Each structure stands twice: as structure tokens, then as C-alpha cells.
Length: 217
Length: 217
Image 1 (cartoon, rainbow over the protein chains, first blue to last red):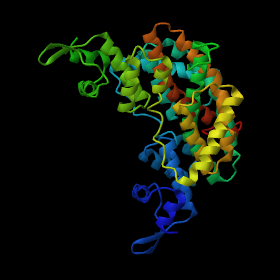
Image 2 (image 1 turned 90 degrees about the horizontal axis):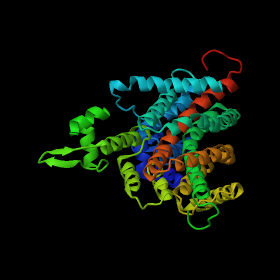
Image 3 (image 1 turned 30 degrees about the vertical axis):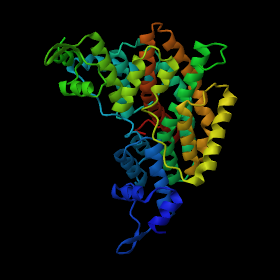
């Protein structure tokens, strides 16, 4: 189909589609004339995925491009593709003053001990390690020891869920499906989990701050 | 202390501090001369909080400003402050074609049924509702029914944790501590939870894809 039809069927504006093409998020259509190209179901599907990653998952254009490149490499190990879905999520490491080295060491030790306690096998180059270390250092720097103590509760909450998620994704069978489910579930799952956490916070705070109350919390 | 000393003690560069002052993230120091101001412990603490929200929590400058404004309003109900910590997290709603209305309706119904099943009391204007609805619509649009089916598992995983988090924050007692813990725990907790989820995914995928394997996953 022509690009106008792609826009109509996806509900995504023409300028947005042209932007995604320029940025390499959407592969070019098949040339059918000097100023014309033809797009197929694959483009429509990819367009929806791009939109999901950026608008709902909150990934940057650059991060989305990296994730999609990983999706498109058939030889890429599934692990690595899943790891790539983290790019948009991991922030640039803050500048640490030299004095922060012992704090980083403490945070790394705390994380390693958690992983050992739970028996999680996590490779040394999983970028999530550094993300977790940054958060733990920040809790310490902000003098929030109670938040630090929640680490096990976080791991406990996520462990079973993560196992079920991976099992579900692997059960998709066909590689293209598996990879797409993994990317969508990883990126959008963060958003969904965060949203449910906010709602559960509201519910808990109604319970804890206004027990028995039925008015506005 | 002077601004140079504030920079030295926080490990945050002078240009960054000046930027935060211009952007209203850091309150101005007390004027001590035509080109001089003095800063205190409160500024140091606030500077660390700003840095945590932006660098580790991934909030935008605008979102951080809104969160901090909520922190500084002593009359603001704690609920509302916590709600504000969500601003940076909630994405701009995607453009929905008119055909999407029934899909939005289905997603809202799915969420309402979840909240009813779990007995969560969540106000109609909690912005997390819309975020969750967007994710559910996206799963449907991307033809990922299995991810949709995970909704209960997500809620189950987060429910107990969220209760413990709120209990811990409320136990801080003094309002300023409570609010700061709530903001830090809400924003950075998302980051930590996401990082642990990635690590748990790696562990689960080693278990499921290479059972018994000890080599690199």
C-alpha cells in the first residue's frame, strides 16, 4: 500500500511516519516510482511497535532504534535482545566525585549479596547491575536507610513474576514472535508495573492513613 | 557557604548548580552581596534530591520541578504529593484514531475489573489509571493476548510490596521526611524494580533456555 494508506490504517500521521523513516525506525518501502514506495503488513506491524515503544514505553528514538536493530538480527541471541530493551531505560551514569568510590563498592557488595542469597545467575555485564547500584548509592547518599532495607522485598516481589514472564515469552515458539513479545513485555511491562504500583500506593495509603474512611483519601 | 563550596561538597559541577538555580529546581541562596549568595544544608540536601530524581530516576527537569513544588507545599496532602511523583513517568497520551474508542473502553473495563477483584480503592483521577489503560490497549493493538493475561500476576506481585513501602514511608513520622522518602522511593523505586526485573529475566532465561547450563547464557 502507499504511505497514505499506511497512515490511515495505523492511525499515525504522515509526518510521524516520515520522521520514523528518516530516523531508521521503519524500514523503507519498496520503490515503485521516483517519489513512491509501497508498504506491507510488516511495515504496519513495525509502525505499531515503534509507537508502543516511544509513546507508551517512553523509550527515546535512539533507544528504540537500538532495540529494533536487535529485533531484526536473526542471529542475535535472545538474551542480548532482551538486554538491548534496557538501553532506553538505563540513565547516563551521574558524575561521581572520587569520594564516592567506597559508596559504589558498598552498593555493589549489597547487590552481589542479594543475588547470592536468591541464587540469581546474572552476568557481570548485565547493565541492570549498574542501574541497581546507582539507586542503592543514591538511597545511601540521600540518607534513606529504610529504602535500602527494602531491597529484598523488591527482589522477592519481582522474582516469580519475572520467571512467569520469561516462560510466557519463550512459549510463543516462533523466534520473531518471541522477540517481539520480549521487547514489548519488557519495555511496556515497566510502565504497567509502575502504574499498578502507583494505584496500589494509593490504596495502601487510604488504608494506612485513613483506616475505615470512605471520603477522599 | 558560597556556591563553590556547595559544588565541592555535593560533587556537582558549578554549571549544573547554576542551571538548577535558573530552572527553579534549587531555591536561591541568601544574598550576601551584589554577586554573592550563601547556601546551607537545606540547599545541599535539595541538590542531592534533584540529582537523584533526574540522573537516577530519569525524570525530566519539568517533572522534577513539579515534584519539588509539591514537596515544598506544607498543606499539600501526602496523596497528592505522591501523585505528583508520577508526572515524569506518565507519557503524553498517543494520538488515538477514532476507531480506538472501543479498545479504550475494553481496556478500562479490564482495569476496573482488576481493581474490583483485588479490592483496591483507587480514585478516578489517579493518572496511573490512564497509563495502565494505554499499556493494555497497546498489548491488544500489538496482538499480545498473553501479555494482557499477565495483568493479575503483575498486580499480585506489586500489591504486598506497595503496602510495605507506604507503611515504611508513613513510619518516618516527620512530614518533611515522609514526603522526601515518598518521592525518592516512588521515583527511584521504579528504576530499582526495573533493574531487578531485568536481572531476574536473565536468571529465568538461563534456567528456561539452558537448563543445567553453566556457560554464558
